[in-house]
Picture 1 (cartoon, one colour):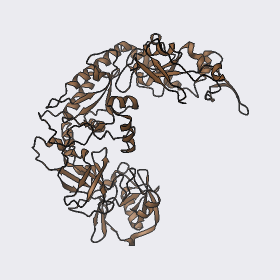
Picture 2 (cartoon, one colour; picture 1 turned 90 degrees about the horizontal axis):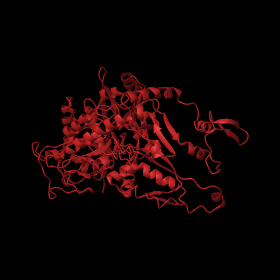
Picture 3 (tube, helix red, strand yellow; picture 1 turned 180 degrees about the vertical axis):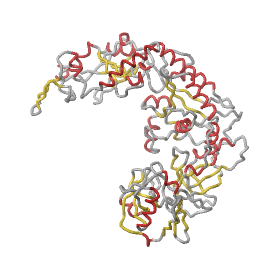
Picture 4 (cartoon, helix red, strand yellow; picture 1 turned 120 degrees about the vertical axis):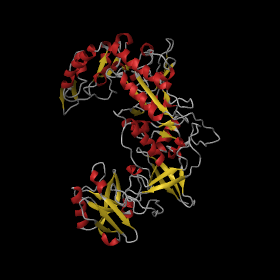
Length: 614
């Protein structure tokens, strides 16, 4: 597309400029009519990368720059990615400016890069244009400045001095001194030509082996994007960067977050870069998403850059990326391929028919039955947020919130009013509260401590309403219990804290809704009901066992409900129920009197539910 036509639009939207990759067409500015524009021709700058950081695609930079300059445009080439794994001939490409990162070249130090400027283009940076935003005026950038008048003389009269004035403040001189060591290392490895050959060979080997991964039914297990997905040979159009997604044997996409989490459990751990890699345009194009789909992913599902929402309506929102550099070795790519094959490739020869499944996602791929029967195998109640669970045989649901009665109704708050969490206070997991709804009492136990009995009636309410911070959100809370209660928890945890009980009246004043806009009913982070399936936990344990790690139980995920899809464990179709909750829209009780709406998933394989009320 770049060789046929490039479109550029100034920020003021006053003019549009089209560049064709032929020497018969040039950028034209039809808006230069006024006197100011007649006195000074408006400047235009075309900036583009010599290698795409999403999938390694390399455009014909030389032709693009030549056409742009012929049309009177200045050009800036981003060589940060390309220069880190191969030679870049700026004399041949002939851009006016080029930017690179020494961190990408050497891996250290961070925060140091360079702007390379062609001598003939230095003057354009300092043209006397009143419309330009004033440059930074601070230490090291000026020769003289009068604070009481608009009088400033930039540092340096020569071209070299002018460039020095663009450097603001103290330079990173210690990091700059280390650069010579980095260049010495590149030379010892044989220079950038050998590094380029080495990294391209690794990328080609990876893509070749990923293409060979197929499920037992013959379907591909990996989809590769970009130039590597279109070509099976090594060319100058490919950089040593591979972006891909894992595909299940039924054609559905494995979310990049799931791949990343399971890879972190590998021994040794595998660190993947996932998402859109700060390149939303290339990401959207590779995934084939329309503008409307991207907008709806944000407005309806809350998907933003860097989050864990990896699949929406059956379509991926990002990808998994593998990048090779001078320090990469064959064993690295072999570990990636082995991990993908062992974790995601299903070697059973199975087929799926459209008549067996109802698909509600835009990919038109059979994923799960339209209605699935499940059993509730475990119920967990968490009376005190982040403390141990109580496992009743059955329990009451509160309406209209839909939460389990007393679930996460209490929290321990520190002196700043922030609820204590397991991540920062692991000893919370040793505190075991048990609620007796008949006696209206909660018995709290902990190792080495005498049991504490907390009365749940209003008689233990002391003080006024307070604000409790839960994951950055304000919730209503009331201090509960006397000094003995506070002293019991503070003594065991070693942190001054108080027991607080959720208060709906206070919440109405401060923050009645959680981050997803659902009315709060306690100190839960998200929705009132958290669910995990035994089938998903079993799939995770298969990975852990393969990695010689100890398996986990459902309680590790701190859910309220644990369900199991009805079906024979030995049934050849049983593997399809491993992540079946990913496709659920609603969950209804057997008597049809109450239904829950799926609000979304979370990074630890659980699903959020909120009640659907008539």
